[in-house]
Amino acid sequence: MRSRKQGLTLLEVMIATAVLAVMVGLAFMVHASGMTAADEARTRADLTVRGRMAIDRVRQELQFARIVSIENDIAGPPAYHDHTGVRYQVAMGIVGGVPLYGYRTGDASQAMVAGRSATIRFVADEVVREPNAPAPIVILPAIPAGLKVHRVNYDVNGDGDLDDLFYLGNLVLQFIDASGTVDPSKDTKIAGKLAVRSQPGLAQDLDGDVNGDGVDDPMFIMLDADNNEVPNLAASAATRKVRVTLYHAYLDTRRKKLLISRNQEEIRLENPQ
Image 1 (cartoon, one colour):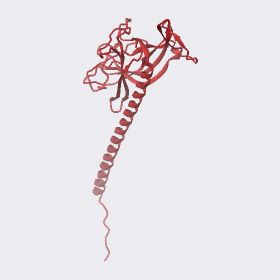
Image 2: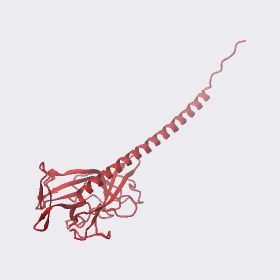
Image 3: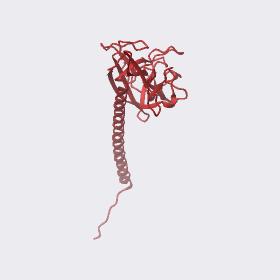
């Protein structure tokens, strides 16, 4: 007697193929999700490292400096306050019983010159604009003209609205001569991938809430010995510390979110005046 080999029917083949396709799809989704989470973790770690390095560099510059001003009230036009720049000098010695202050020239000689100063400031190079946010406004030097604008239709920082305007850019060291003139050719980038946010309805005020927790996030604030803010434009004898808050950020357009790392430090001025 001959045995008869029985193959699969067309229906069975179709069912087996469908089951296999579902299994492969699920496996791909799990893999893709894992890769995305891993990518996000790596990005956040990179932002955290960048933030710590930036804070270290700012501390090196300010710890033994005399603060000249923090740019929190600019007459304009347009009038604005932003806390994104701090101007300072370092002690050069004592002449006739009076401390002498200045800063490096910024050229190859790096010579110290009395009366000179430096500014660490934020300079934007990109804009992230939610649907209901105001249009970007040009305010030199923090916000130059011709910035690339990313129009997004989602809540970037998860604060529950679509009204936010973010500026992404760099922290730059600028050299200023005794007359107050800045030489842009000597600008030195000390940190990148930073974020600030304008105040709601005030595109020119750059000390808004970055991470969506409802609290404003000024980059630089002068503090007295009791940790109270010294609000005036020119630094006073009361200034004892500078609170530095840096948000390093990366716009993840695939996951529709702003990946943020916050680094903050209160730098005690060892030579405040």
